[in-house]
Length: 244
Image 1 (tube, rainbow, N blue to C red):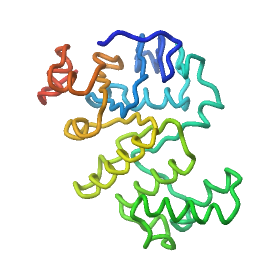
Image 2 (spheres, one colour; image 1 turned 90 degrees about the vertical axis):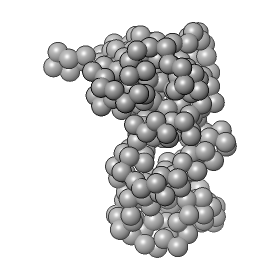
Image 3 (spheres, helix red, strand yellow; image 1 turned 180 degrees about the vertical axis):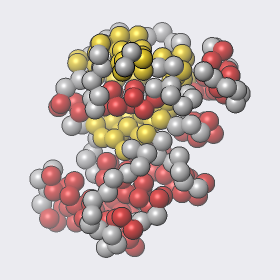
Image 4 (tube, rainbow, N blue to C red; image 1 turned 60 degrees about the vertical axis):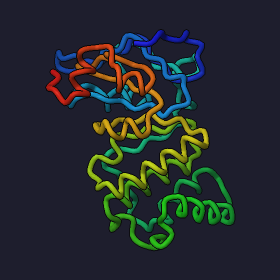
C-alpha cells in the first residue's frame, strides 16, 4: 500500500474506520487517503465491503469507530451537501425525465430560465434530448442510469460516488456511461466508484483501492495495482481466482 498523506490532505480520508453487525466485522479500515484527481475505483470480491465503504465516505452510514475526513476535517452535513451518490439501482421520481432534473435544480433556487437552459445542457450531456417528456420510469436500464448520473451532476458536486453504475448494462450502454464519467472527471468532479469490472478499472481508474474482508489490502496507481499488485489477495483477484 502506498504511503499515506497526513490528515491535512485536501481529499477524502479514513482513520480507524470500523463497522460491525451481529458480531461480524464488516469494515476495518485503519487508514485510507484519497487525494488524487481520480477517478478512484474500488475493486474486490462480493462481501469485501466496497459499497459499505462508499456509503461511509458519503456519510450515509455511521461507523462504530473511526472518522471520515474531508479536507482535513471531520465530514459534516455541509461537506455531504457538496457530494452526490448514484446507486446500482437508480431511484427515479414518478415524473418526466426533464422534471427529474428540474426537481434538483429548483431546490438550488435557480430561476426558471436558468433551469431550462441547464436541463437542456444536461440532457445533451447524457444523450437524452429526445426523452425529455418521457416518463423517467419507462426508460431502459442504461437510460435510467444516465438520468440518475445527470441528476447527481445537476447538483454540481465536488465528489460523485458511483456504486457499480454499469453492472447490469450491455457494452454499448456501459460505454456511454463511461464517457460521461470521463467528462465529469475532466471537469474536476472527483469520482469514487465501485466496480467488479477489471476492464472498466483499466479504462477509467487513476488509482485503485483493492478490498478483501472489509479491509483495504492494496491502494495505489491503477497501472501499478493492475499490472504489478503487491499483495497475494490482489494478485488472486485480478487473476480470477477465488478470494475469501
